[in-house]
Length: 403
Ligand SMILES: Cc1cc2nc3c(=O)[nH]c(=O)nc-3n(C[C@H](O)[C@H](O)[C@H](O)COP(=O)(O)OP(=O)(O)OC[C@H]3O[C@@H](n4cnc5c(N)ncnc54)[C@H](O)[C@@H]3O)c2cc1C
Image (cartoon, rainbow, N blue to C red; front, side, top):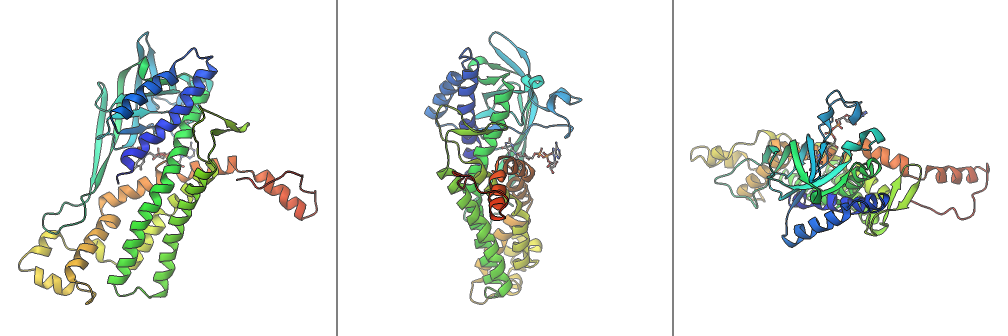
């Protein structure tokens, strides 16, 4: 749970670093976005602050672009440019840990056309800034008073309503460069999908542990179907890790631009390989609910109706519950109780439902990864390979395997 408190902000910082540099370059350095960004970054780092990333807009009518919306505020945009700064309006949704962040880093959600320059805006403001209204959802595991656990987990997401918020120029990192706005959206998502390849194996470790202990406490660790299902969670988790690792290894200061392919981008800082970040994120994101199905299968119905803490410690009920909840004479019943309460937290609590949604949609729904993969992967190369195998035309010299 700790990673989300930092990864969103860091992923946004990486994206804005490259985009502010390139936007200045394309403006013949008549703008100072990168200088603004570096000055803000120094303040952020020196004070050891926490940042969240506000990318996802409310988006209104899904099939309409920002400029086509009935209500133009469905995507955050600039409503006024002044000599001392800009005024922005809109609502960013599902913003993880904005309630405890020091700084909110705002980036665009999607590719933008020339008629959508007002939506190509990136900036940072303090999280308790004037005019920013936070509507916070709190996701905590069920409170315990008597039966201890290893840690108290929870997190928050916010709707961030920017109700005509003034942002001074020295906190503005992009304003009006629609091509770079689209790249900013893409780059944040890419960095975040890369982070997920570290986050997801960590979650996978917890899921494997929950599944294996549930099997052990249920006395079925050797059952063939249990081994088969454990293998599935392990494979997804480790393949996600491998994809992220390869994405790092093949990283370059380059970005994929439709029609141009991979081109140098930014001041020279590392950008992970897009294909590996996207295949890893897509594979692991799409597996989320199947993994929950596996946990449900191995556990049986126990976690969903497990007694409440007060019944478990009630003087009259405790001896009876200790007797009937005991499924495995080799494990102290107190440990079995602690385990199943934790299993419930991670699989059938309100918070676990939210975590599953985050793991599925965070960084972009699977369709977004599918678009990135199929538009960026060198499918032409593979067609040439098969044409050469079929004797249709020989493989041209210099055609090497590329991701
Ligand atoms: C718990 C949680 C935490 C999150 N944390 C953050 C965060 O910290 N910062 C942040 O910026 N975002 C965050 N997100 C947002 C996340 O990135 C989005 O949920 C994700 O990008 C999907 O967007 P959406 O929720 O608007 O769903 P939608 O995009 O509305 O998707 C719903 C369905 O509509 C389809 N759809 C949408 N548009 C179209 C279209 N034009 N054509 C065809 N089909 C379409 C989708 O494919 C999908 O099937 C978080 C999300 C969750 C659930």
